Image (cartoon, rainbow, N blue to C red):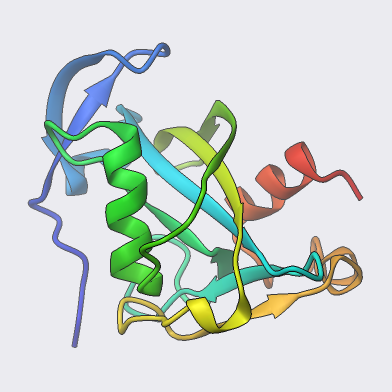
Length: 168
């Protein structure tokens, strides 16, 4: 069975995104609340629907939930723009896209603290090729998302971020 690499080293950052150290993924996701940077890419089609990935059951955080199209850690020594492009390639086979910066914020759960760097883009439907890092995905209308919010279907991070940038 697949699993996340708990020994992967991640940068630890301050609130401004400056690197102040490093720790393992296991430490970052184990409740010590070390602030680590991540990237999110919200992918829309030309009709305004948003693509969501389905997280596999083997994920260490929020398994079997629907989440942002692309999301992942910034690696040690990597900048946010490079991490965004790498994650888009790895998760959706997406190479050619024009990211628009939405903003950065701190997301905190009972297990972790992330400095989230959010972007959006618009693509043609046939541009997406989900990898085996995901358990598939699909486009959702704003109405479908509004009707599903708060029902435990989406990750808490996606729900908070969606409402931050696209209030219902």
